[in-house]
Amino acid sequence: VVLVIGANGQLGSVLTESLKEKFGSLNVIASDLKSREDYIGNFEIIDATNIERIEEVVIQYKVTQIYHLAAILSAKGEETPLQTWNINMQTLFNVLEISRKNNIEKVFFPSSIAVFGEGAPLDNTPNNAYLDPATVYGISKAAGENWAQYYFMRYGLDVRSIRYPGVIGYQSLPGGGTTDYAVDIYHKVVLNEKFSCFLKEDATLPMIFMEDAIRATLELMDAPKEDIKLRTSYNISGISFSPAEVVAEIRKLYPDFKVTYAPDFRQEIASRWPNSIDDSAASKDWGWKPKFDLESITETMIQKLKEKYKTGSKNQE
Ligand code: VAH
Image (cartoon, rainbow, N blue to C red; front, top):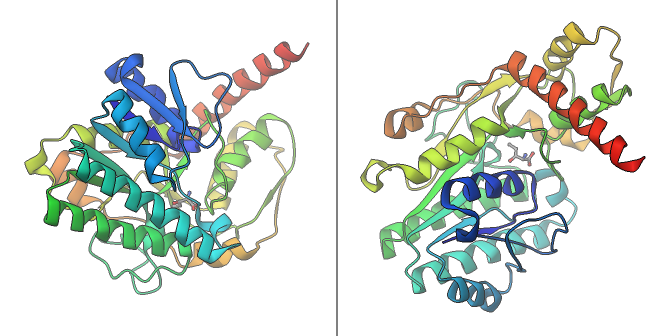
């Protein structure tokens, strides 16, 4: 039985559906701060800063795996640094402690390319590059990775982790990240609206399509334990692009698409993150290989969002 914490989020909501397909609906427990009306299946309200509440659900459903996807992201996190630290770390400590005490078989902890800062090479950043993150979110992920490794070394807890690039998907909306523009832009295209980008046009960042991000997660969690050589976190890459490049790709289909650039504090965050990622460790240890490039992402995003908005408006009629 799998418990997903943060099941309403950008990644959590889509991952929960994939886990339901994989393990069967009855064997997946979705949880978040608020319930979701449209959710089909087991749903529990959990505030993950409350250790008793998580444990209650773990015991009630005889949970054997936990996917801990709740966190305050990079941009949002800068509004209240200490609160972000407290939430991101307390929820992780709660999950690790409960997992240790209740003999949870596997734990998934998402990290991010936000762990990198100015000390790491910008291009093809290696897995073991120096970590000097400049956001609280990044600091919490870098610390979290080390705690994950600590629980593995000290208690044998099978915690596994991926450093996600920016995730692009049509199924859900991101909230409070620096890479959010790459999702928002597709919504604007489909709605025939202008787009104002909060990053500079040449701000190249590592990104990954939702399907690839989910597949990476499931493949990592399925890999035999002895193949997982890295117990901090694995770099994974999808593709890399700048706002100008995604705009150029979109204009192949929508030549009149209008974009302006109004970089804000998020540009500062982006400027310290890698342009591209070396994921050779993930590819060697558990066979990671991304499938989607910018062209296929753009085509799929536009097609799926068009369908979504069409049905959306029909429902309103
Ligand atoms: C953020 N989407 O922007 C997240 C992420 C690589 C970036 O971890 O904060």
